[in-house]
Amino acid sequence: MSREGDGTIPEGGPATPDAIRHAPGYLARRLHQAYTAAWARRVDPVLTGPQYSVLVTVDAHPELDQGSLAHTVALDRSTMADVCRRLEDRGLIARTQAPADGRRKLLGLTDDGREALARVHRRARELEQELMAEHAIDVDQLLVHLDALSRRWETVASAGPPG
Image (cartoon, rainbow, N blue to C red; front, side, top):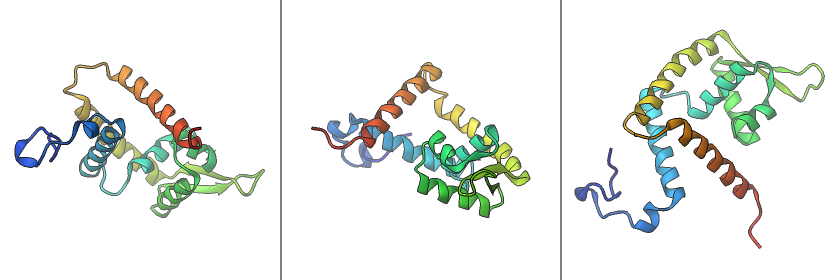
């Protein structure tokens, strides 16, 4: 699919300058923008990708605390609190206090959460297969590289200014 201004369709406006098209951050933003739009149309218009990540991880690790979950799904604590509140409001997760530490919130899926996860999980896998279908690349190897790149970018983002 072509995007306006990316240089692939002449009637869509001027070509995107090489300095932008060859910038990793620009390409990452385009991928994220397209994925988010496809997710809303094909997977679920209400449940977001981060919310889905939380449901998958809570299903895999029942009774995980919010702080550990935030680290596992790469969300900051305030975003995690908001995501969990929204999921709890929709009846998809339940938050309970940890017996040993009342400040820690432990998370678990509700029956509605398990049903939503099963429905959305299938659609998410179908979307991912469609997105990668026409590429003659080793998807597993690409994911390894993207994970390494994500870790590097997170390290750079958390560091202070250079020098």
